[in-house]
Length: 261
Length: 348
Image (cartoon, rainbow over all chains, first blue to last red):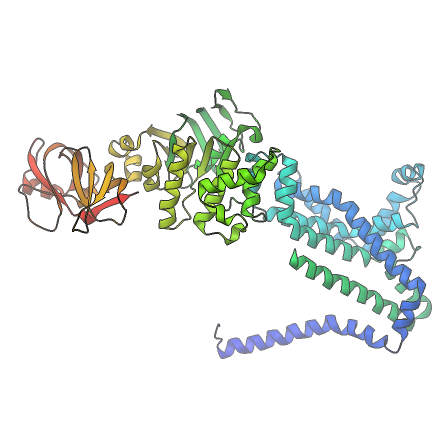
């Protein structure tokens, strides 16, 4: 046990007070929505089919987008961790763009690519696929703003795997693909899983980009916004409390699972 | 079996220059050099993990310079961290077998584990193994890979003294069993206790390739001499002396008493040139080893002078110029040399 001097103890107290104030800053608004939703209004929200459908839509579309885009993101993350190539710094910068631009602007950018007039939109229409105002469009908008979380976490995970182990696998007769799936990916799995969880969580709570690409069908954040603008705080708070509860339960559950992996 | 021809390789901070050597089947070839001279780079180039800028690598009579890593059938063992940490010892050993689609995994894994003395640890995770067990498991995996050449990159550096002795014995056993070893190290004790042939590496170049005796007794350069740091090196057998705590070392008809915990068997003995006393008469004292000999040569050293004294074998004694004058030493003169049993260093 480290013994602290009186000055150090005083500093510790000041830091603890500042940290406590910050924790309160996070906890208080969330506790507030539960306080405001007491008295049966949250149960009413659970009974509402529209609310249940919006939450379910948010969850599964974000999950589908996360899984679909992981097939592109994980190989890219591995390349970024292991290979040197021209303009690698630029590529790393491009990956972070969705984090730094306003999400409404991200929505407009995605919409520009997916409208029927665009090349991608026309190609999708030819296959009978519609993006704007559809779950597919919501999925693309969610993935656009949340994919950096997966790529960055997976890249850091792969970079932390000793390159030596990959070399050894090759000398032991493994093909590069076998090496990747039996050594690199399992050893980076904890970080990749973190990235998947973050991408999923970030995607399902996205509002700005989603509302521009597809107002309908309504995801939970869009429904909360609509109830707020149409009926006020009293009607939007129970939906918000319910969605926050679902998000927290999933988040805590996945953290427990991740710890056991 | 393995021939390296004028291999050159540059990589950030390291370079190999015109490396040339050959290793015959059954050789134990040790590359000895200070840290950072490019020893690991050389092993990785042989294994195919680095592409040389020039030069050729021939293996089993074939040019493998550009051949894929997977088909070279060379196993590499690093200083530490070579086992896959997410797999059990069993699955680590089975890894090369699965890569090649082998059947009867368990039988082959058990056989490799028995040979390296790790059969009782198959269900363990690598992080629960001691340093010695860890390297045994690594060697078992190389055996399972059915490689006939092991590339060893300082495999004993992280081990305690007891494990080092045990692992050296295992490496010698595997070598006697037909596995050719290419072993890089900065530890001259390791080199002399294992090598049938030693290559000295300096600044990315292999400056001297010879037998251990040749390297240590007739170093070709000041670097080698200063690097190996020892001149009186003998290979022989040791046995206990009844009624005494001394051991008797025999080599080429000469008997030397030494103090060591190493049991009877084949050993290597070294005596520091500064530990050898020189006198004109046999002197009584605590030195258990006294020999009469003839001065064959007198070589000026960085500090003082090295006397080459023939006592049946050649001993090197470093003395001061002042001692040379007062004892009136000259080439051809008969003198006495003596040294304590405790100044003999013995390595299994």
